[in-house]
Length: 357
Ligand code: GH3
Ligand code: MG
Ligand code: MG
Image 1: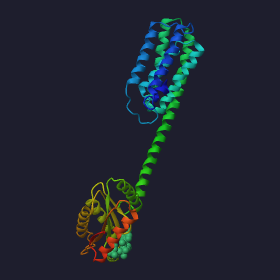
Image 2 (image 1 turned 90 degrees about the vertical axis):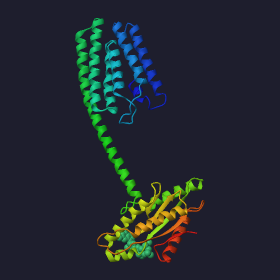
Image 3 (image 1 turned 180 degrees about the vertical axis):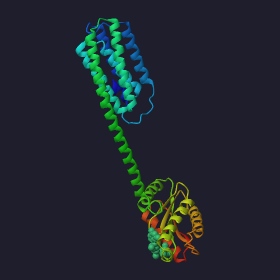
């Protein structure tokens, strides 16, 4: 019953399964009640079982809030209700069978520890124990009971419940430790995948990642969806900047250029550093004219770029080659066309933007 309850909502037909478990359970109760095996049932017992069955139906109808853990959807109410049903029916049973049935709610407490927090586990355990006391008091009110046997059973049940609560605490602690470790691993995985796709110095996408992006954009364009235009940028005379002002100033210029480049594109575009002072802008859905506008803004801002107090009177510029993707061509082809345009921009004096033929 407990696991049928736990699976409600997590598997197809799980509510039907839980209802079938409830039907079977009630069938056992009724056959016990109608046989002379059961310990003298009365109106109160029927009332209790009726309330319990109604509670099960309500719990099956109520939509649970998702729990922190993925396994099933066992809530506190479901766990408690399943356990209470068991201790109530156990009180009706003749002695050896009753002891066996009383073991089930004990395992129910352990099972609850797989799904719920420590506090709820203690509550389920305490209320199950209390439910058992109520069931025995009800039984004693309706039929002759041997108080010595009842006290012995209750005592053993109490001790076993304490042991189960202890074990449930250990299970919860293990589960919490595992879930913390899983969270840490997920964080590390996220960090690693971020490192794998980004350039360390500028934080822009790296060559590997931008090649993947280009593959995806090509697939979209070839299927008649949105196309793209490439801007291949190379900083002019960058070696000179390094030679005159040092690598630290060069690194600073690269970072500054990266942030300018990110600022001139839209959020759907991509900016990558593909080599030392070479960058690629992938402008999604943009044509050559739009790419020219973006590149012009980039060139203007690069000229105005501040390189720090140590680098005075040095104007950094950028040359750009633009190529729009033509359906069916290879990624290497469009990159080569942009590269050739960039080469022409360099050849015509740098600080130029050339559109590929
Ligand atoms: P051109 O105008 O023809 O592009 O000339 P250039 O000097 O920019 O080109 P070249 O290829 O001769 O030199 C590129 C320089 O970029 C050389 C290298 O020291 C520098 N560089 C490459 N990666 C880094 C980096 O991560 N940090 C710094 N500071 N410099 C770098
Ligand atoms: Mg270069
Ligand atoms: Mg250069």
